[in-house]
Length: 332
Image: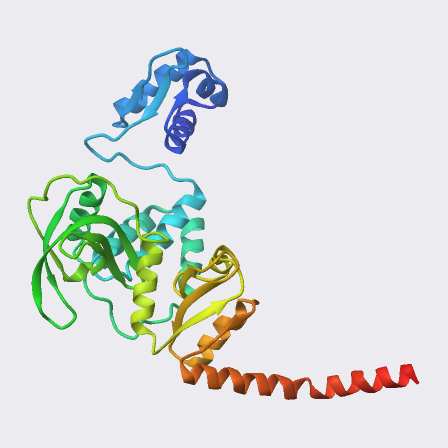
């Protein structure tokens, strides 16, 4: 049987692992009676952990949110994951200071064996620096937007466009998406009657939020795919509509949402709307489909694919000749 202090830690770990625990199962896990479990729960409550009792035939216990944040109990892997995650979050403009403070507090209380694990990951990891720092995002704005998404409340906000112009927008917020070092709000633009993506660092919410709105179908592929398509296509130098001889669902399963959009044609063919910064990258994307396709434009892509066709034909010319000679010798 576990000693009382060790048993309390084990009980706290179990309560943090899932929402509801029947008392009988907790007693079995700890190797004690249900009466002892009740006493241990009371001890946790005295220490500031808000443990709630549930009634019924399977009555038990759950750890709920309280008015203060008591110490968390993390196992080794959880503690290392949180420490590494906080250090990664320190690279996000707008929350870096808070993440650095939290990481420093956590690492200060980590056992030496865990500090060594965290330190090794940090010392032997080299992040690729961004071309330029990401725009600062106010954590308070993120909180307002997230709450409006959760509560389905209309938002009025001042929005600064990429050209520096400003205007008031009315939108029904759906999701926040983190892409690289930027945050985006995916929302239904009420005035434009369509889905739109807004850079969070350009949003200044007006309070209070508006009335609640009914849910609507999300953009095709979901919020993350919608942002990926928009961000990627804005950066593409070359665009193409490619007819692929395969069902739309087959093609969609083979591409990253950031690579393009698949449009169904007749159940046997579809159109892939795609693009890339170079025609060479575009040709690589098409080759990775491993499917038959037809390209009619742009001219640069057509010319590049013709050049590749000729190059691959030359690459296999000797093999084709050797096969022909072997076949002639065998027939003779």
